[in-house]
Picture (cartoon, rainbow, N blue to C red):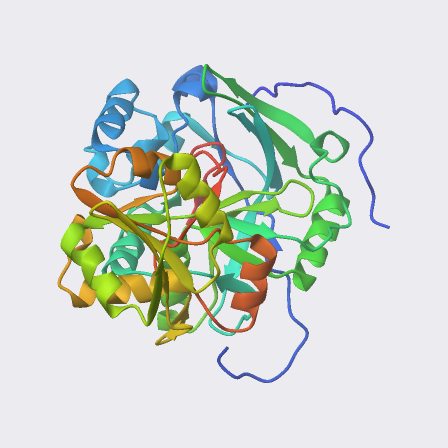
Length: 399
């Protein structure tokens, strides 16, 4: 594939759970032979990328699938592609995708006025490794479905987002000092650059450094859980494409996922709350002020014109926080998953409640969340929303 830049820019930096016998931990992150689009065959990269699949509504997904036979969304589920065999293998045979030598990649993503760099690599997933921490629960059916899709499609079409705060020896947020810029994509929504890091010294130093890190799974819990299940099933480590965000240098935006419920379910939450106090909320700004002041075991319930801060038990089974307790009450009341909507924007919920009720959760913070999960706890399912999320299709990985 023709490179966007024929020469390197700048000067590369050079190197300076379940029980198991103690041993030196190996690297968490490794280079991998990435798959990238060849624009001569597939078309401009900007026309082939897509938002994360969990953020696509039906109409947007349909439009993407119709826009190009090579748009990355075709690789997300087997049923999105009607051709024979695996789509990823056909695309390789047709030259729409090319495979690099083992590399790391840095994706610079500028969207909505915000710039974020992601280090793309192959995460080793093992049942014995306690350095990778999910922070939310998962739906078992979704894990089963995700594992089947990954094994059927044979490709990681988008990365799992992980967050990290430990220093790296090389500044991969300055990719021009480490490698080649190989892709640029720009449209009215975003600007994306892909940098390939293939220098042996750079690969060695980043790989070795990853052994001392701890990763927080930010987005992609079901994919991580699916690959972990495969590792447990086969008795050997499996691997997964991840995008690392350095929260110490470029802080991510972490929000709570609030609940929009039937009024009867919210009334049950109020009835079951150990303690409660009425508050005055007149507008969306008032909601935001109260939400910002909520403690970890509190929630704001807005229902039938009343606004109430409830105190929740500190733990619900193996999970902690107000979201887990609220969900247990709601499920126990008989409310189905399809009757609950999850939204990160508290102000938008306030203005559109209508005949439904809102349950607003406290704002989480990355350091506190990392401390919590490193101590062995987790939040309830669908409790947080991280931004920005890496786009699908910048770099892919064969499974």
